[in-house]
Image (tube, rainbow, N blue to C red; front, side, top):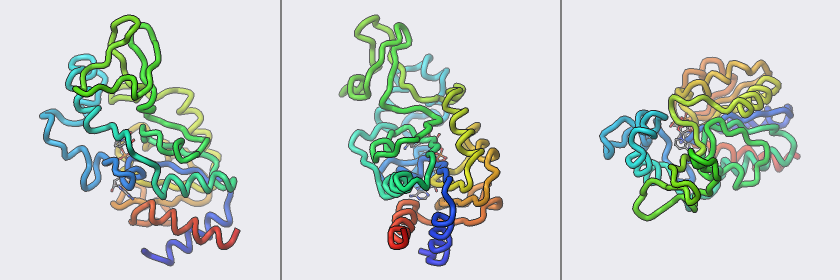
Length: 250
Ligand code: NAD
């Protein structure tokens, strides 16, 4: 680990207060949930004969819900996943009133599981599911089944759809507004575990007009050139170490 960069990050966290975290699938790889475009990412998946973006699209869901659910249950759902060091470190920073919000592209709910409160989920959450006919709500456990079949509403017999934003679908307006407000009023923006290739989510970074922008990601991103500090290491490891150093000083 580059200790000089970790020290620099610690000093930024010490000296600023209104910090916002913007993250993606890379935040959860240390919880053994694969990302999309990383080394072991789902994009390299060959099993389903269709590109992942096509399977996870609005039109595909309605055209071929059977295959959608086979992919979704097998590749997107990790029922036993637990928050990792990155989630815990961010929760700690919120508890210290340093971090004001987490804006995430993740749908796994792990930030909330670790106790973080201000979490704006741009792409929804796998734990909420709704019948497309009558609007009845279902938990993830209620819709899962051994054969990965299409979950059907017990009340009206229609298909149940996860409350996740599929390709071709718009983001929830209220969540977008809250995320943009948090980013545009932040002093520090930490961006981590995201390739910044999914739009419009990635475009939200342009609302940041604060003092410091930090990028923590294995690989290079299109925004590295705008960052004050770039750390190409495991995000859980980095944030855990920074929080350890902070605890010595707070
Ligand atoms: P992505 O897969 O496009 O990019 C992830 C990035 O994180 C990669 O650049 C990778 O190198 C980096 N990375 C992976 N593990 C890391 C680690 N431990 N430390 C530092 N960097 C790490 O992900 P994205 O930009 O979020 O876009 C993918 C889309 O897929 C999102 O919209 C998201 O909703 C969805 N998705 C979500 C989950 C989840 O909820 N856990 C998982 C897979 C995909």
